[in-house]
Image (spheres, rainbow, N blue to C red):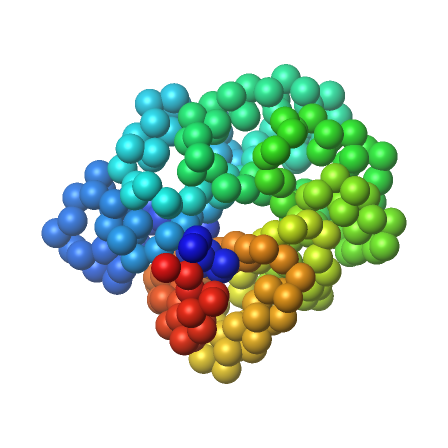
Length: 249
């Protein structure tokens, strides 16, 4: 039975994690394998900024265990530069490259810029560019998108509404797909925030509630400063591992 909750971090290749998460003597080429022994999934953050080289994607697949799962953040060229317009070429090229992960590609995350306001036909047209069978989640950064019209469109396409913990943005647990996707950036400040034990227990309660509605939940900590992300991810794993239905085997 596969885990119903997959917990990891957004990115793994952070120099400041050496000596905090990675052993000081461990060479960089060993970081991903070390990470994959601690967590069952990771969110590729670098794919937002540039298309990874083919040999890089193949090495990610090769250096991780059989059931390891990658989420991949979609290109900002489409979301932040072209702002969802005329993106067929970008989507096709990006998907061809990241599909080299084969069965290990779990979800594609589309993060919209804060300045992009609600435009349902525009977003729907963009989302329809992704190949059938690819799991997609959308992270909104402007509150105009948080409405029933948008949620119904996402449900019709089977696209997940990404729940985020982010300063000055309301946490929204709306479910729109057979899976849920959660990103944790920080509460009072982004990236440089350590979630408390109480906050993690509250998060665990929400995840248990989500599992009444979805098949799987993907959780990624993006508070990388001072190694908070892997520390919080491990804590949440411990809290949820008490429930064998969630942990899987």
